[in-house]
Length: 371
Image (cartoon, rainbow, N blue to C red; front, side, top):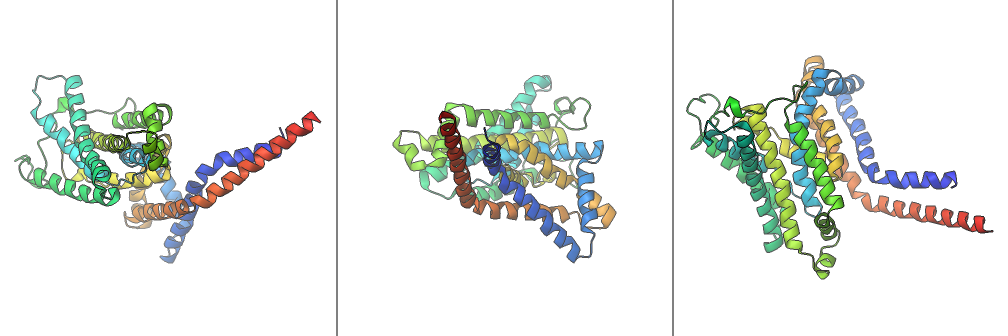
């Protein structure tokens, strides 16, 4: 096969990742400009971000600790996206999932073993998150309510409900300065992975992403969801249950975010409190878009965004920059991702052209062989 044909095919295969790569390059350029305008050394800041994220075993553990919930909240965006829905309510689903698991932990019998109680906590969190985001899908499919707006509003409602219950009916009387639910019993707490100071949520988050990828790419229902997302009208014409598929995708995404809430309560916070609202649901939107809604790519992108978040304290100590500087970096990355996503049509046209060129060259090569 001619080398030019191999290069064309390599270019075609790389094209789906180009918007993300270009967005990363544009983000670094704009962030450097943002720092230079303030008189800060941009190169040193970028090096510190890399060091704070991946420069030591402590940095890696801090990064992975943040990546664990991001994998699950990103699925809350990526799974509904398979059916063409843009859902951004993962923060509310995480909050309710964490609250539901904390309530279960406070009411299970003391004699119940960990291997029986922990699945109940996980199930409660997944049901709470799944029902909340599933309702968003139901409103979209059955009443025509825009899912992006409704999921954001539902997230606000969930957070308000969370705060009301934590500071009111479900508050532990012993939590004086920081309202919270009763603490998760030590016997039900989720420990760390062997050899790491990172809880088991990291492993379950990665497994959830792998399972979601297998489901989406290699199952009948997953294929049906992608068909519905590609052309809703055509999916209905061939008899696919579009409404059910959309609601199921939203419920699955919400369940993933609810599971993230359970791990944050049982492994990190020790109870449901205001610290649970750390913005993982919103950062999950960035992770999902950076991964281009691919569940497997979410694992890598979650580690990248988790590293950015973990590096904030190092920037503050070394350069005196506010800890929120990393939020500016995340915002620039999200804006660049949206900008390059808008150019997707043009890139798709280039991809088709490259495929046509590759096919023409292959045909010409075959004709030359016959001659």
